Length: 221
Image 1: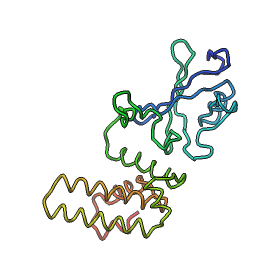
Image 2: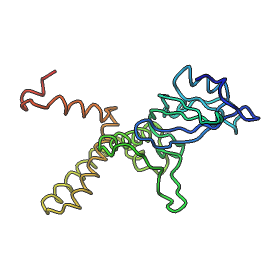
Image 3: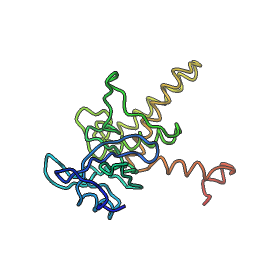
Image 4: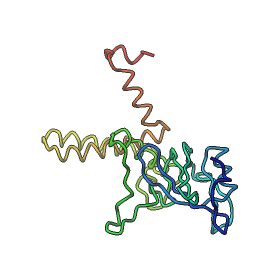
């Protein structure tokens, strides 16, 4: 595909829908002109045209929430474009994963994803939001406040949540245990983000241990 095939409107713009490659979630819609399309094709990072600022902009240039382009499609009339991307962090300036988080019938319902319901993916997406709150602190954000208060505050929360999970388990209360372990995992992800450790590194460590005795896997390659 080349930018010559695209049918731009009278202002030289074309609407761009952005979709998450991993789960099909619609992340955002923006506009592009010929220059931004060509920059996107060349760099494999999304570039758009700001109608309000009248300038070219690269997604994530300030926030770090970049989009790696994996595929580009045109619609049947060639007057709309679809970017399929790997999203780093969140796509919306509000801090939401997707810009489409306001439903006509449910104000808190975000645009659905259609991929696997794998726990790993859920943790990865949550980690990306947490990491965004670390890199781009937001007023009123609980996660941002934890980072601002430092590692001791974060570790204190882990201790509290671990204790509550133990109590729920001792009481054999499954619903409460699920709730408390979710809190524990959440704060553990915040700790990982503090040290710049991704969930993927934890997955790899767990995978490295399969088939090994405890005394073997700590020093294994």
